[in-house]
Length: 114
Image 1 (tube, rainbow, N blue to C red):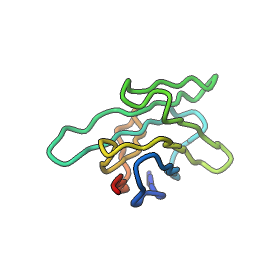
Image 2 (image 1 turned 30 degrees about the vertical axis):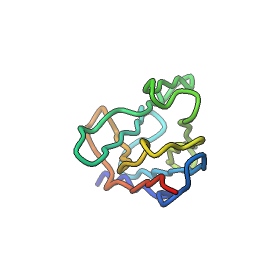
Image 3 (image 1 turned 90 degrees about the vertical axis):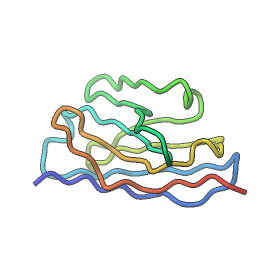
Image 4 (image 1 turned 180 degrees about the vertical axis):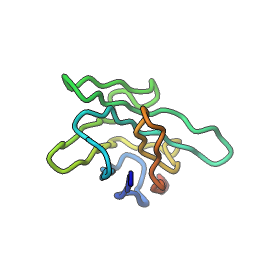
């Protein structure tokens, strides 16, 4: 049974940082590309970052380039999203996804507010 469990969300002030984690089970994580999405209230879900399973290739939405970093630890079956210089417009529910099979985590709320 495939499971993706996110953690690490919370309330942070503008300019602050958070690190999200997504721990996977039920599939061969080390050979799976993984991604992070987010959905703000009243908006469509959008792709934030992707990490390929080989060579460490990454890609980011223009809105987060230079501020967010996606990484993974295959020994822990975990993908991370380090978020720095957070802005109020980063407020959203953040989801991890195993894109190839279409599985989503339950999401974790990130709120950036003073």
